[in-house]
Image (cartoon, rainbow, N blue to C red):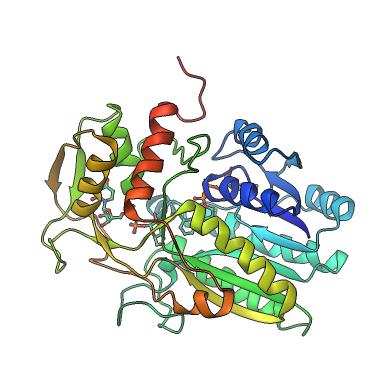
Length: 339
Ligand code: NAD
Ligand code: UFG
């Protein structure tokens, strides 16, 4: 299938590109490199042994997107491009609404112009908000507690309204839980700029010696060991979920929201110990006060993905830690040239 991938140079996009290319999809990708490096594409091409076309462009740029859509004529779009930092979204709400909502609307308008009717959208478990029950099923109430989460919820709504205009349209709203890990080659992985906000990149930077210790945000939650519990999903499993979603929307019409998680909750301290075992490195940590806005625990009900997409996560916590460590130790400065 001819697939336009937005944000293909990012963490999830790059791993999905490898899987799409291995499955022989014809890919064109667009990225403005605001949070990634063009070096990613060299590595994706080497890993998949395939080439693809890309353009440096902003999904908000209607003229640039219009030319790309008319030239490539995609049959489907996978839309990763967007801003994703929860804290920053609270400080700059208008920027987040501008980037994430306008970007999505512009894409849908371009799709209409060339009669492209299929879209897979990067949503997030954050759309559920404070759990009324766990695991979250797809019909759990949607009450995001931050601006970033609202951009995801409202994008889901915009896409659903777009799809409702024509019964031949199809959309898959993928609600990711906590993506971690790296390609098992160690060639591509997560490369956050500045101080990582998320647990796994922080742990791996402690392991490589870039940070002295991990701050564990709270040990007094009502969880198995008092630390926060999340559903971590290996990035390669997440990537294969996108290819399954693409297969599904090419054969079914309408809109579906689907959780992509493992269905299992892992605590911060369990992750620290698993990383120590996988890497052979000691991870020093300090218990700190809770981080504002953090939930005690959440994890996915992953049965819908299994029934609808015939997809199930296969990688273990050990795989997630071992692959993160391989990427981090082979690329201590991420995609930056090694000094
Ligand atoms: P990322 O920042 O690594 O990738 C996003 C990519 O989009 C980057 O390469 C960036 O340069 C590009 N981009 C951003 N704005 C753009 C624009 N206006 N035009 C063109 N390109 C643009 O993030 P990721 O972790 O790969 O996330 C991908 C998607 O998945 C995002 O929409 C994110 O909100 C969503 N998501 C991520 C997580 C997570 O924990 N990583 C969880 C749930 C949902
Ligand atoms: N944590 C620490 N120390 C750190 C970082 C995190 O103890 O330095 C803890 C957090 O308190 C939490 C757990 O590790 O208990 C996971 O935190 P992350 O920041 O890695 O992930 P979140 O669950 O907070 O958020 C992630 C994404 C969001 C997305 C959400 C739901 O960052 O974008 O999952 O999908 F919205």
